[in-house]
Length: 159
Image (cartoon, rainbow, N blue to C red; front, side, top):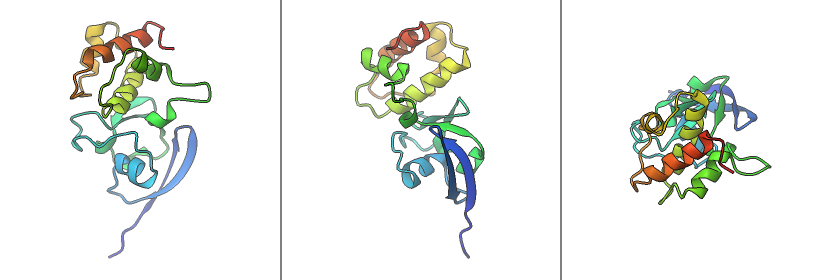
């Protein structure tokens, strides 16, 4: 029995891509193992920690729970795609400014989730930010600084 791959057309970090994927390949495994984009982390592999959060068409998704073939035609942004020639994304700069990380393992997922959160436009207070970021866990407990960084960008700061 041969393994049949499927062609996947998508835009990844602003670049059109045509890829061959097995039907059971998760987006996280595609990013890390096939494309060598290792910023998104494999934390729990059950969608409980948020370390693998990326943006699909501007919305936050857990890459470990998303089959790659579900991203046909999608625009994906990973932590590697947030910065540009002009410099860091404002959220990345705010995380540095507010020391919103310790070990750094969850940071890519936290940042992608925070960018998506602000694009959703539903967070209007620190309490709402806390609630809407609750799917992203930090074992180091840098939550206060993470909220400060998000609030800084939400208020127009960041860089």
